Image (cartoon, rainbow, N blue to C red; front, side, top):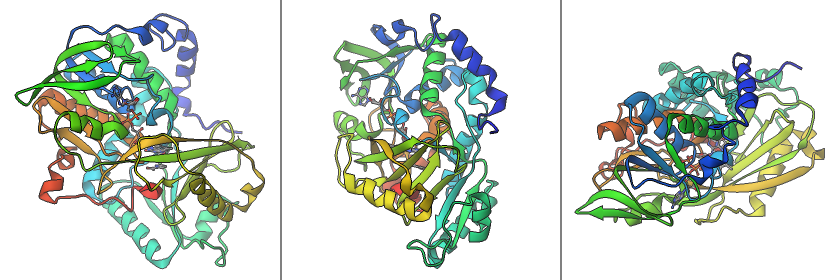
Length: 423
Ligand code: FAD
Ligand code: PYC
């Protein structure tokens, strides 16, 4: 079978193996026991992909390296290591299309940049339509994508079946397929590799990754932040950046302002490994489910958020049952496959299904949140624009529209359709 790995990057696999046991490598234990200094130029709170990408681009693009990334657990153990790896840029509105497209382009070279194979695989992402109205919505998005220079195709059921013969396109199915969009450059990126790749690069640059260090409060005087209180003591910095996904509202509370964010569990699950049977990622908003097949052979299945608000990383079984039964209707061949394990993350959902990236009402405090169910694909792009915002104390042109004050001005960017299954 032809390898799905991006062959341009395979040399990096050797560098992973070669460097895996050396000092400064991901496996170097000293990284996880870093004692924080008293002062930094910038503290980034949250050692997920977004936090680490922010630190990386602060160093790479703005020459700022006196940075601590402070993580309450271990890097990449939040949503970064729990997501289902789907990347794409086919959003409806120009503001979001350009932001996600910037990110998709950064994935292209990230393995070379980090000298670590993040395994970007352009296997294609399908978004199915199950009614005439949904087909019109999908077709509208395809046209909008094309106007923004983003590759996007509209396919008929017969054309869809040519890409994946195992899909059920019977008009009498519970979820009959009317059509689909396809973004061929969409696909998957290995989430753990992203965490390891950024962590190793930050370590090499000399940025402190402080793990097992919970931030309990912000140190604010006269509405200016200059430090954090942690379970390893107080740490001070000129600027503080928050990238904590589902915990964002807790930080807003510490800063005495409000975020229009709800935190929800979001689940995914995998089957036992089977032989290669499905190459692309297949998503369906109406069914509230999506599926892809991992390199190891597991079917990776996910659903929408669990509807209740909460801070637990644990979901309910009915979500798994509903989504799996719908996936089996779409792919009857999967009915014999056994499920192996399930898990959940904690996602930060905003009212317009778009992120909030920018300044806060507290001087020198910056926030990056609201990515909800779809922030993994944005990891490098988000870090890039957030680093610009922090370094210049004003947004990059690509995140200007994603400021917190859009909820006061009413300039919302409604991406509920393109955000997919999950919102
Ligand atoms: P995280 O990786 O969660 O990082 C935040 C970090 O902040 C955590 O490590 C946490 O421990 C830390 N933190 C929190 N509080 C504190 C504190 N007080 N002190 C210090 N540290 C703190 N997106 C996609 O684009 N494609 C997908 O296919 C996709 N699938 C998903 C499937 C699931 C099941 C889930 C849960 C999410 C999915 N997402 C997907 C969404 C995506 O995972 C997130 O939007 C993205 O990973 C968020 O990255 P992050 O770095 O902001 O968050
Ligand atoms: O945003 O594309 C997405 C996505 C897929 C699965 C979860 N989120």
